[in-house]
Image (cartoon, rainbow, N blue to C red; front, side, top):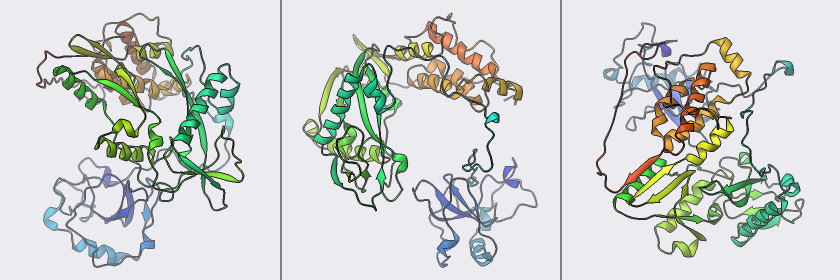
Length: 486
């Protein structure tokens, strides 16, 4: 395949046909093989419209799932000829090409920053399984380690288990509090159920809220919509909402400390419930609400957790009020006081400085993997460590352990991006083998846990006496990888 040649073209010429239903990907007509591709990796020339004078039939170009390719078949030679005529021969990609490569594939339609590959790799796992399934050949793979965190109180997973457990009174109180908040905020109207209504189901989510000392502060119950049952364009549209980043938070803390300012933390109660919906959403009667679920349903007027568009409408709502005065009069605000726990990061205030660490998360992580009493080590990885891909035999044997390697690396990656940049290189090395890990990679992960055992409270410290300038550090090696010698 010419597309996979190292010296072949890095991109292919195509024509934009439209967008996918959720507006997240483009539909591109590939000129060299008459196929429509669904892709996000596209660079557009907005000054060139090769099909402006043509009227292709819309039914010839239908949307597909990610990774699917539609063969337009024959009978479109005239359409392709129009596109081929608009190609500027002076912008042919200057790369070494084989004689068999079509000139149209290597042409550049005026892109200013170089061509980009348009080929989409399909999903790794098939969406449809055909034929009989032999359960004897299914390898059980646990998504969680066999060593679980021991806690004095178990969090229920269902509404029924919450009402039958030893802490049923606490969970019942949390359920009533959640329903009361929704009624007070006028989240829904009870309407008569009609046959043409498409209902979205509900589920209850329970968790225990803790403080920076890992002490239980509150039992929480949250009524969530089953957003997977929603239909694009029917009961939701755009879903992307800007999110806060740890980098921005750290920069803000650095600015506050440098200027000798204090910062407090506030909590907006039932935040999503304050945002109004644009699309019509009907909700089935949830458990705990004393309403006949056969005759009636809920017409949602406000967003609830679980809806696909809930983060976006809450962002729009919050942004609108932040641009005005009177924030406290519009939302129920709880002043927590000086910030001590944000996004799982412990904040410690001292004279003229602020420190950030994730010691409580490290302790729970060590307990999760049975490493809470291990012997500490001085470095995240052993000196001169060279990780190599595992063999097929090692991959099979390691998978039989039932260890979720991806989840383990994700845990330490959260540490490295939060308050432990000293783990960055080790996490980067282990992340290269997420798809096919082996025993060597797992031993390296356990070595990182031993390092964390000796440095649980190490973190970032911001002091007011430091310079505001940026200091950058870099490191490199030559031929460190034994596989590629790069």
